[in-house]
Length: 447
Image (cartoon, rainbow, N blue to C red):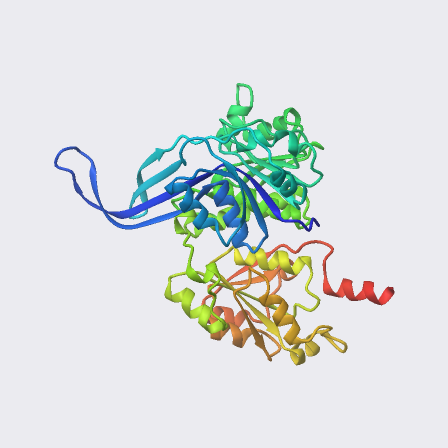
């Protein structure tokens, strides 16, 4: 497992959604008239990939170019407090993509701005890349990726490259390259036959360990340099109409999974699952930088639950002893938080943990376990329960989603009856292999 932050390198855009109702036709042209109801702004491009990873609870450094214009200042404000920004200059004006939407349907997109990043690598950029746990290049063809090509040849951590038709050719030795099918068509010589063959071809010509050609609702076509190839389907059939940002979600989630130690094919499966859930929950258009995400977080679990429900958000909960918190726990919690708008962790009390785990457990008392969990950026609140199962806590919180680790896959959960009563969806997330509290305790006892 790599302990450094996720370093995202790429071009940041400003995305604007103008939402309203279109119930009239203009008298001077056969076009709909949109009565504006709301306007929302968010980072786009590499900025969105970095923001989504940070919302998972990860430490994220964003290397990007920002202009000193009103749109650039808006981007700095939106990113502040979420990611550490290493700023390069931008020649020209900030690229802004404005979508005019009526009842969730995009009617037109208006693009403005001509900004490009100069080929410049500063000492701050070098230090950020060298301290990375994993690097994600989120190339939107505006020059930032071009400026770090030589520098990326020196890194020893996994590099994930999300390419762009007008962008740089990925450097040799990437652990994973993630083109869409349209991008794969452009990268492959004609005639194009299938995404599976494209993925296999691109591993060779781009000298990558693996390539995953993303296929929207059909998952990804995966190929490894060893010759192994497969289709990775999504965990669910998605029906969200807005796929904006799905590629950024996929690439960021896969990069974080690689940083957590997952094999590259498993990391792609994680990315497919997170992108599917992202689209199902509304995509980038559903992102709201709420005040409690800016540091003003409620103190109690019930306050968090009530705030999320009142705002129409999605409440996520999970449970366990969380004794001797390790990388597997952190990975699970970070991925759980990404499923919604807030994460509440239900923790066994000392007495409950002892009944469940036996004499000598927990090793860490509940007060310390709670404090460590509360310190994680991906955890919004912690609830301690005294019972043998978290069922009563679930019935109090009424989460929309209950998350369990992969070791529960295929088994009836002890809290299943409570989940049915509150109508919560159960999501099982893959565990990080080789990480367990029992294993840590055994290793300590052997020394």
